[in-house]
Image 1: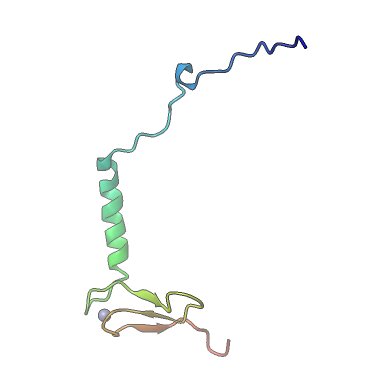
Image 2: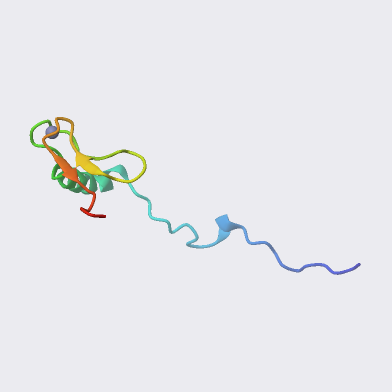
Length: 80
Ligand SMILES: [Zn+2]
Protein backbone atom coordinates (compact mmCIF):
# COMPACT_ATOMS: atom_id res chain seq x y z
CA UNK A 1 0.00 0.00 0.00
CA UNK A 2 1.47 3.27 -0.84
CA UNK A 3 -0.49 4.66 -3.70
CA UNK A 4 -1.64 8.10 -2.97
CA UNK A 5 -3.88 9.88 -5.39
CA UNK A 6 -2.44 13.25 -6.17
CA UNK A 7 -5.70 14.46 -7.58
CA UNK A 8 -7.17 17.35 -5.79
CA UNK A 9 -10.92 17.26 -5.92
CA UNK A 10 -12.18 20.41 -7.45
CA UNK A 11 -14.29 22.61 -5.34
CA UNK A 12 -17.23 23.65 -7.55
CA UNK A 13 -17.47 26.93 -5.76
CA UNK A 14 -13.92 27.85 -6.65
CA UNK A 15 -14.25 27.29 -10.39
CA UNK A 16 -14.34 30.63 -12.18
CA UNK A 17 -17.55 31.04 -14.14
CA UNK A 18 -18.84 27.77 -12.81
CA UNK A 19 -22.26 29.11 -12.12
CA UNK A 20 -23.49 30.14 -15.53
CA UNK A 21 -27.02 28.86 -15.19
CA UNK A 22 -29.64 31.25 -16.40
CA UNK A 23 -31.17 33.08 -13.54
CA UNK A 24 -34.79 33.39 -14.54
CA UNK A 25 -36.52 36.22 -12.87
CA UNK A 26 -40.25 36.45 -12.40
CA UNK A 27 -40.52 39.34 -14.83
CA UNK A 28 -39.07 37.17 -17.56
CA UNK A 29 -42.17 35.03 -17.53
CA UNK A 30 -44.55 37.92 -18.20
CA UNK A 31 -44.45 37.71 -22.01
CA UNK A 32 -44.50 33.93 -21.83
CA UNK A 33 -47.59 33.90 -19.65
CA UNK A 34 -49.29 36.41 -21.91
CA UNK A 35 -48.50 34.31 -24.96
CA UNK A 36 -49.69 31.22 -23.18
CA UNK A 37 -52.97 32.81 -22.20
CA UNK A 38 -53.48 33.96 -25.75
CA UNK A 39 -52.73 30.47 -26.94
CA UNK A 40 -55.01 28.73 -24.49
CA UNK A 41 -57.85 31.21 -24.97
CA UNK A 42 -58.08 30.01 -28.53
CA UNK A 43 -58.85 26.62 -27.07
CA UNK A 44 -61.59 27.78 -24.77
CA UNK A 45 -65.30 27.79 -25.46
CA UNK A 46 -66.69 31.21 -26.25
CA UNK A 47 -70.00 30.23 -24.68
CA UNK A 48 -69.05 28.82 -21.29
CA UNK A 49 -65.46 30.02 -21.26
CA UNK A 50 -64.17 26.65 -20.24
CA UNK A 51 -61.05 25.19 -21.68
CA UNK A 52 -61.66 22.35 -24.01
CA UNK A 53 -60.73 19.11 -22.40
CA UNK A 54 -60.15 15.68 -23.74
CA UNK A 55 -62.61 13.06 -22.64
CA UNK A 56 -62.20 10.62 -21.10
CA UNK A 57 -59.29 11.84 -19.00
CA UNK A 58 -57.78 8.40 -19.01
CA UNK A 59 -57.44 5.85 -21.71
CA UNK A 60 -58.11 6.39 -25.35
CA UNK A 61 -59.02 9.93 -26.20
CA UNK A 62 -62.51 9.96 -27.64
CA UNK A 63 -63.67 13.52 -27.70
CA UNK A 64 -62.75 17.12 -27.10
CA UNK A 65 -65.37 18.82 -25.00
CA UNK A 66 -66.11 21.96 -23.08
CA UNK A 67 -68.22 22.49 -20.01
CA UNK A 68 -71.48 23.45 -21.72
CA UNK A 69 -71.23 20.84 -24.41
CA UNK A 70 -71.27 23.30 -27.27
CA UNK A 71 -68.11 21.72 -28.45
CA UNK A 72 -68.04 17.99 -28.69
CA UNK A 73 -65.41 17.04 -31.16
CA UNK A 74 -65.09 13.41 -31.96
CA UNK A 75 -61.44 12.42 -31.89
CA UNK A 76 -62.05 8.90 -33.00
CA UNK A 77 -61.45 8.21 -36.61
CA UNK A 78 -64.44 6.80 -38.31
CA UNK A 79 -64.02 3.17 -39.12
CA UNK A 80 -60.95 2.90 -36.95
ZN1 LIG B 1 -68.77 25.55 -23.67
